[in-house]
Amino acid sequence: MTDQLTSRSMREGGRTGARSQVDRSDLLSGVFFIFVGVLGLVVSRDYDVGTATNMGEGYVPRMICWILIGIGGIIAGRSFLRSATTEVEPLVWRPIICVLASVISFALSVEKLGLLIAIPLMIGIGSLAGQGLRWTETFLIMIGLCLGTIAIFSWGLGLTIPVLPRL
View 1 (cartoon, rainbow, N blue to C red):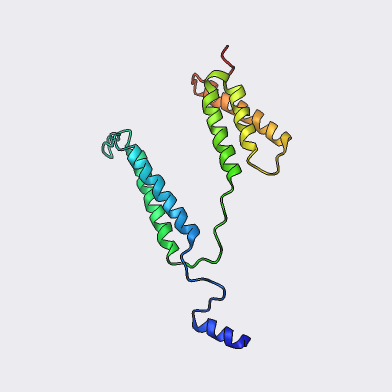
View 2: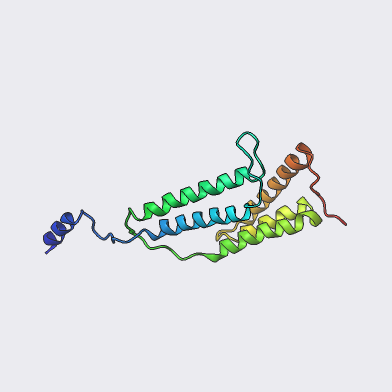
């Protein structure tokens, strides 16, 4: 019986256990890239594109959008050439929500609270996305990023980003 199954699978292309369906993970990834690219084109439709020698503010964003659409098309097209051997895992929402909340908290707090509070707040909220939270490592990252950000943007580039909270 086993020999019959093995010889039959060899005649059918040598696949054992593979399904002849579309690879859903690649298809969904490709569609996502295409969606983001099209969304970017819609958002930047009023920007001046200019020419290659005299670029406008919309030149690079629109080029990146077209590259995203092309990459998405390649990934989605490749999904029809490969068969799926694994299922797409469901989304885990905790990391998505924590990272998004950390970026939003930084954007809303940096002007009033300054870099010394906004950066640790962002890192603290973002660190909740992971399972194995180590507070000592997180604290060291907070210190390092605060010092590096202040050194690069405030002292090095001379940007007027508030370092301390405004009273």
